[in-house]
Length: 245
Image (cartoon, rainbow, N blue to C red; front, side, top):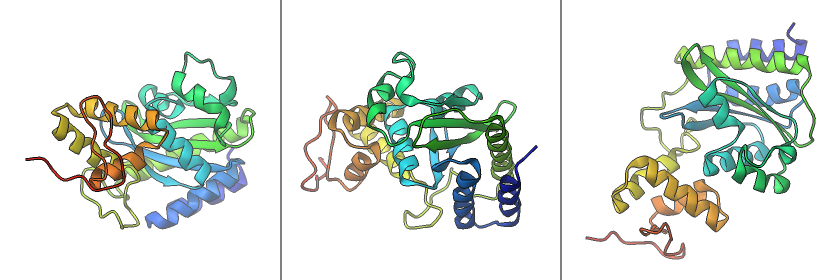
């Protein structure tokens, strides 16, 4: 049975058609689930996800780290269609997510629970719940989260939100959180004559080795303050970089 708090969240989700309002609803959903934050990401291509809504800075930082590393419970939930319940990131086996487990002790996020959004073979996205303290979810919390994920799936497949295949102004309230990463990937692909997947790997490697998020690195590339060379090294971020003829 769905909890009364989640019933109220679902009711608001059904009534509100504005994206900003739904962002507020995700914060209410986090409260209903007893979490410190919720994130909603949509699948774009090749099982990559685009962060659409995020209710807390702790959750945003964790999502950005997963996107930078290309591994974690979120990507696994998308690729397998199975919920990923991680009651304590610090206790995860190193060979499961090698890079993520190295970062885990320094994260504010301690417990992470990812619920795939989709119908059958259709992958729509993933609902991620983050908590600062370790510990498992109760059966009630799992049921409520699955219900919320199903409701969000119905909303997105019903095309009430902006599509991910069209341009969105960066200052729009509907702007996609990782759009700048896709743009930077395209620029690196052209500059280094690499396929897009390899260009994204170069971005991730540079971000991780420099201790920065892939979003921040991508912003520097798009604004031409950084240009990667064939070894994935950058020329610095202090001055704009001019295009070569």
